[in-house]
Length: 283
Ligand code: AMP
Image 1 (cartoon, rainbow, N blue to C red):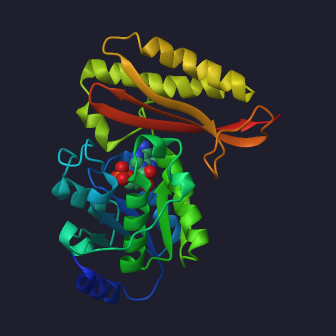
Image 2: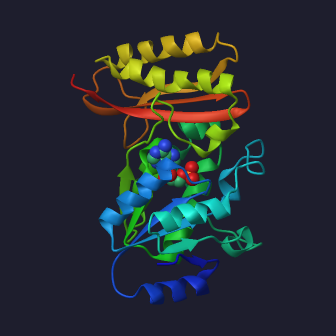
């Protein structure tokens, strides 16, 4: 069946009518679709009768020095991916369609949006939550799928759904990696071959950390790999490596039991990459 491309709310209403009966899952993306996005779409099919994908590079979640203008835009290839994965509706609005010129109101990501990744990207999570809420209001899915790759984003979206009583189920999807461990990301295409080799240190650090049992040992092992990577050519420039509570993203103490998220962010050349892994801590 053909993919219906919707650019605005009126198109979405028509698309929804064309789908007829059945539940709907939404996979929000910024396009430049890769195997990670495909896995989200496949998971979406397990949770609903129909799948919609949104493609929108959200200006609100980029800071002034971020890569908004050079973010990859590959709409035709993305449509092909959606067709191959049996997506019924692609919602691809313009920025003008999404944001009124005199807009006033947005979602605040609270304290949780200012720590960890939020400390390095002021306003980022407010922008993410605002666009996600708008996409949910526009598409009105029963289920929405988000990747664990953006662990703090997923935790904040769950928090928003709970705090604002959103009538949607939020489903998390595991991170898809290259065979050598590099987490798939639309930004990987910026990396030169030597930069990509350095970027492998992120997943290597996470694996080293995850092999340890206590919070201090986990962080020590991950930091050792990242310290080595800082001496590579080209070097890895670490923003942070933190072991945090999966729900609150506050650092866990030595007495923590249960799951923790080992999260890392670093720049290689001009490309900023993030990755994380869930580590069970038995105490
Ligand atoms: P993006 O287009 O990068 O904003 O990502 C759209 C969705 O895909 C988000 O929910 C991401 O967490 C998810 N995603 C991105 N990369 C991966 C990956 N390697 N594995 C699984 N999900 C991913």
